[in-house]
Image (tube, rainbow, N blue to C red):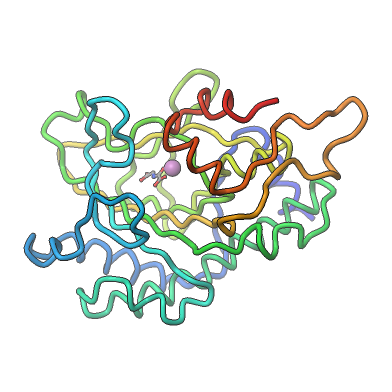
Length: 289
Ligand code: OGA
Ligand code: NI
């Protein structure tokens, strides 16, 4: 009961919270962080095989191409992996170097998805939705992992690692690394998120805001760079199936509380998201009723 209340209160107040004692073993987390950092230390020729600028490719290595609406570039490389649940054969689409990568990612992503689903269940209970509301198609897409790599930056004052954005999915679980850098929008300011060992930083994506009719908000965040240390963070995104409609839950709509967002399929949502960009205001404008 206490945890249910705490996640809902933190979710409503800040849209961000950290979770410890979540059941994903310290070993699975350590191995994941280590293998991801090791991937980015591979010689460029070896990584190049996986590099692609095709945004439709579910598994690829790229460099600051996703937020390229203007001419701005960001100080970030990203390894994106699409993971089935269970992982099964989807791991064959991931890099085979470092040698342990596939095994380590599989052992990490399955329990991490489980934590995300448990949090969704707790949030549902707190909001008066049936606990399994998000089970099935609403969370039936691949789990997407973004391994964000921010090399040391010679001019951190001039360049962000990731621009201000909201996530597009339902719920995100981030290992932010021992090198801090994540900042969250709060009352017009940016606040630093403290680095807590083995903790997941959890936040809600646009789709959860739509599905909960705005009870849970998708909050803008960004990543800072620093001059001294490379930073590698691991974001795990729980995604819906591609072609199902997502709209405010009927249980959260009623008299005096009309639906605040239009119902969209995930495909349609992504088409709009890719054109308007990831800023909270523009996505809100596109989907608010
Ligand atoms: C993300 C993200 C923050 C970070 O991948 O969506 O917000 O600290 N990452 O790397
Ligand atoms: Ni994000």
